[in-house]
Length: 182
Image (cartoon, rainbow, N blue to C red; front, side, top):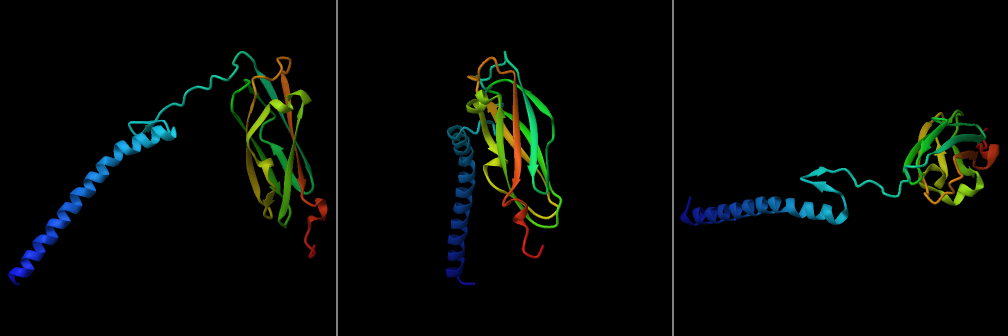
């Protein structure tokens, strides 16, 4: 080994040590950057742990409304709510689940159509997430649980004590949606 090789090895070692120190420093600096980014994005992390989200002040806890869950189906699907009703406070975010089963040996496309009673509640019933927003495609014998996330606007008339949320699940194209082979 010549002196030239030894000198270039020391230079390389020095560069590698500098790179390793810089990598450690970068990793150490990421902690405050991460915390700041979480604050800016509203991820609500303190000391790297999620904190309880502030309570929704829009909830009217002085009132309760019973939401009855009804399901109807047109076609070959089985469709039902997993519970009959739920009691909510106006403004309170609530999740309910509906279940659909394709009991036939073919793929079925269907769309859920919601309706509300009494009619005066319609503009106050706010769905955040719903399977009714798009057509559903179910494979043969597939069963699926589908959530509906909603709240009832606190501006709903005080006379409203019970709301019926009804979905009719309609097979796209009706019973004629079968393939030519059937």
